Length: 391
Image 1 (tube, rainbow, N blue to C red):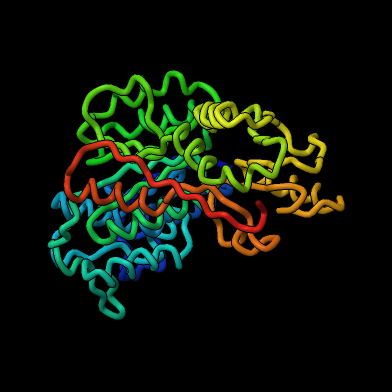
Image 2 (cartoon, rainbow, N blue to C red):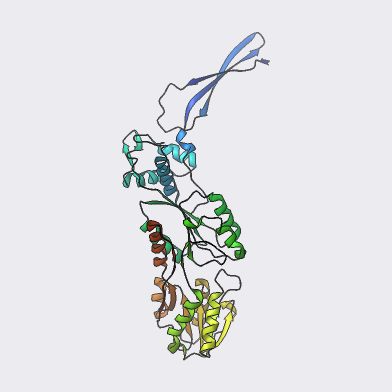
């Protein structure tokens, strides 16, 4: 048997592309197969992909914590702002988006519906979505970088995003207190943002954070929650004064604390929490002659009458309460409990847990306010004490 080499011809498909199939070009290859004196001509048709040119500008970052539908919407708004999309331009179909970015149809449709809701896109049944207006009014692009996800960080994010809704696109990233990831994300951003809003807390390597932060133009920088020594220039910051806050809070609680003999702070050995918290704690205990102790692991500490515990982490609070509940000691009578960061559950748990808490909503709103007003300045975040039955 002999086979002649194939000859290629390329032709347009003779049916209309309806978005159900991402392919719109076909290639025909013909070759002869010989069996003795017989020769057969075979033709194979191969579908070849031809991308919608819009896809070279649309972008989804799979490492970003920003929901993919919002990334899609923000990317389209950016294209409109840069003139890459004009009024009445037809956008890729839901199926094309789903295929190209490997996202669900629901996610793709949610992005389009979001833009339709704010008046940027229109739609025609059977035709798809199109650009309704180029008056997007969205020139702010924000790089938002948090150290971790938690209920308290969500309060910051929600307040921040709500205040900037409709006027800014936000790319949201989490670095899990890992300096290497922090560094990589900032270097990858390539100064492509109007503002950088950063919470700088690290388990290791944080001593070099100022070097990375100093690569960001200071007129675009807002530090949240913590100031970083070595960051130079004039920039905005909304921060906690950790040493002063715990000292002033314990002063407010000095009377109920006086019925206990020993104040114990649960401060993990491997933590991102600032050492300034311990400085303020030691200062208060020495100033008012309280016996005190630093504990790294709540699970290994015996519970004794006359102890009052300050817990920074939610998991340590759970361990502590579990240990107390198996004793005959009563919280608020024989043993005291103070927890960092207010949550709805702490209002009702054991008739109420005393809390020391930052105003996280203020932090988010203030950061948005500085962006909208193009202002600078350093602002301390309010810190509150809520005394309850646990003390």
